Length: 112
Length: 494
Image 1 (cartoon, rainbow over the protein chains, first blue to last red):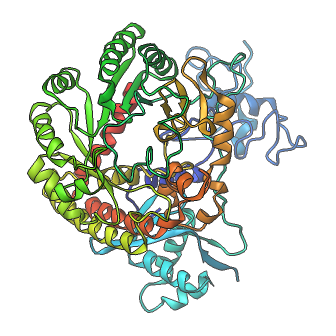
Image 2 (image 1 turned 180 degrees about the horizontal axis):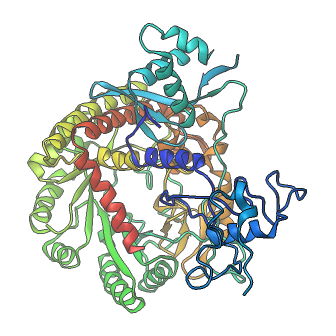
Image 3 (image 1 turned 30 degrees about the vertical axis):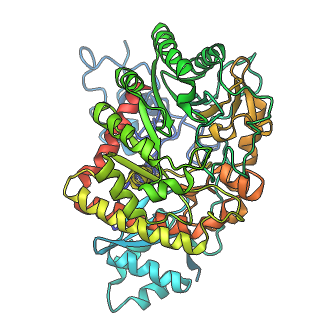
């Protein structure tokens, strides 16, 4: 709210409520959670369809390329995925993939 | 084009600006010029956003007005005409569970205050008294209730309170004239302290008395045990003696004044409050206040209009309420000036209202009776509050068997603000919620009826309190911050 100034405690709660309604939904959300940087990449968020539901909420466009799933899980998703060891053996396995939505085909295939 | 329409609110001015009191949320917002202009325009006539922009084009640009409209929509001060207004939610607070065997305490509202009528007898015969006058509910003279609470019932009551309370319990002794049963009162305090200690709970005590029976050893006991005291007194001699008389008709002022002064001199740990009953004949509130604070020495004085059926000659009529409001406003103004200068002023009616306003209290029920407050009669029957103690129709269990949850649920079902149709369009309902159950019972024969005879007075007084609040929020916000601290403290205790 830009022009209304909250005066009493309840008005403060109204402002918080309105702000929350405008906020994005995050996983394991708590009431009145402080705003943190939020980068939804994996699964059902934003551009990346997931296993359970696609962007439209249906099942027609679920993830197909396994490399994409691995990549998204590895970077930002809570979903546990087996990924190459970036510290020792395959530090550059994602080196050619600067933007997942375009370059996911360029992720290296890694053979242990 | 869809019309924008005003929702429920009360606009008030204070400290040179407009404020918005939203109903039913009880949120208060400060308005700037554009939001204020939009709100006033829509109050005059519903119109679409573009028409609002056009009407205010000379004063504000379109972006400013769009922002103002967006804010007011978000706060629900306005809405789209075709969308139904949100109804007041009919939620029963922490609904008590009827089947206490399967889930003993789930959802049960803890008892915070128990008002214990240690006697239903009185050594005064105040003509306006709701307990003995023509409007009485319970026959205290010839009824089957004992005239004095026994030691055992008092102990059972303490057990009941500690069983039903959270970590903090308040016990208020009441009557009749409380001090007529001083022996039981004294032993109950000791027993309550001991039992609370054993259970790891905190208990505190207070009492209401007419002061006629105060004597040095009682005063000493009150001081030693840190017992809060409220004195019922109506003001200077001629006002006090008008109604507050002994059974032989003699006035009580000369008896009580020196005793109260002695109490005030000795008892310093808790503020001693005066509680004044206002009648049609005693509406010189400023004078009463001056007398009780300056001449007697009270730190706090609270006023309440007499509870009566309309026919009584001491009942306050419409003109009386207007006069009372005028006097309250004068005292409120004086209170404000003191508070802005960070000085204490003892007009307690306003402090209580301001705390509720600051927190944004929006009540489904007018008071805590039947929720966190219960009354106990001399035989141990639990009632809605002390004013109904002993009334079979308002019984909610006994101290031995506990709260009758079914009766409690039935009461809460029947007395919710959402069912008080008369209140549904009133902007003051978040704070008033229909007013005192007992008053309604005496006036209209039922607790469910809103107290329509003092609506104008309630709205006038609430508006005054809101204005005072607005002033303080601009000029002394530090004073209001004390209510935040109190809340933090309360939460820490819970």
